[in-house]
Length: 588
Image (tube, rainbow, N blue to C red):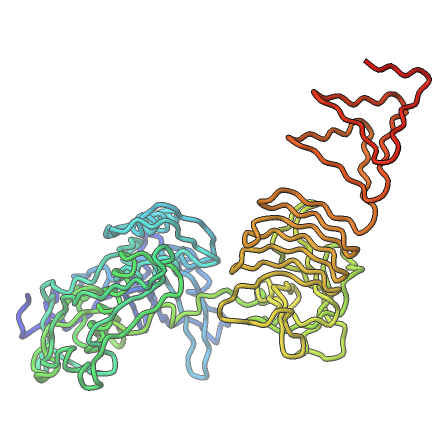
């Protein structure tokens, strides 16, 4: 570590020197550089801004702007130092070139970004399967032609989806989920956990090398611990992971547990309503606790310009009181050169805010084409037929939009839908329906389901036992299930009914005329309230161990061809008269 009495600059810090190269060529010394600002911060793309005096009112021209020196897209390098002993503090590309005219001055402004800016351009979509987060992050960085250094993660993830997000935003979200930070330096993207146990790169002392300081300790930002929870569908239980206490820089004399106790302590819960594995929950909890601990003390410190100050490094502050002094984590650096002087500001500690809380990652509702509509909405059905597009839609009206207009055509979500197959339970006109919207676009509604209410009650009253389930049509045709008695019933309002019953151990078919077929353990019974007619185009065969046929009035058997009765024993008997008659009668 450097001496406490000075900043370890390469030369006496009395004459600041700055060298600007574009396209590998140093800009002419005649260019009047007004100021240079270079910013580096964890989880951000490094940037630089140059202000140059340019513009001549007498000749109505901007001489420097007219050259190709600062054209957007050109590579640029910024070196800062003292007495021409310079170090590179920024490498990147020029992204914008602008001029500014005020009453008494005019200038050229050049905005620059690290080459990693390419990761922020455009939203992408991709599926990742059976990979670790570190593998995914390497792909994201490498696909943009950048150098990479990614600390390996341990958890194999079944599926990860990048949806309508830039590679940069997706990278930061996955890094944060693993308790990692992203540092970009001269076209190289590095991902890893904060190195809080490193040696300090510089000691800055109040009354000597410290020029400015703002520091704050906020007890609200500290928890006793953090646990993460999600649902495990296999066990039907909540799965939980509690964070491990991280190693931190340990500055000051107010530890996190004392700060947490100021507001009652307690474990802070992170909740995910979906499914996360135990290792994922552990990473999540550990990462969030690390973020909290590094937000215990936050602020900024300014001192003489020093190229060695980098995000992710450790600085030691002395002489600022027992509450604050000690080693602190650098999360950002800003170099400013103006009026011949170079000063460095370092940002101390991590922000407690999540990346997803500071940047709106969600795509615009309705893709920004119209104002979007959020959540689910109540609709009323106004028309079922004559869809002008022939897309099997129905017309619905949202009462919150209008109570009188016919509304808009909406698709219907069903249990199954395909080419000439599927379910078709359409609601009735004036039914109340639940409506969602594709891409949050009010022009693309989908009916997701229908609702009962006191005005439109369900056909079966609800009970906690919930044995009865089924469907009842508008005209009271019913298809019902009784889980208690294990009965399935299909019936019409007129009394036609099919019953499959494990309670009665059989099947019964009954019509509204009193005709019935019963199949159970005793056999099959056919009952007819009037005639019973059996008719076949070919043969009818009846077979059994014993067979009895009885008529309460007359019994007649007739064949247009021949009739044959045979048996081991045969009896023909008439209680009054027995008649055997034929053209020829043969006996024996």
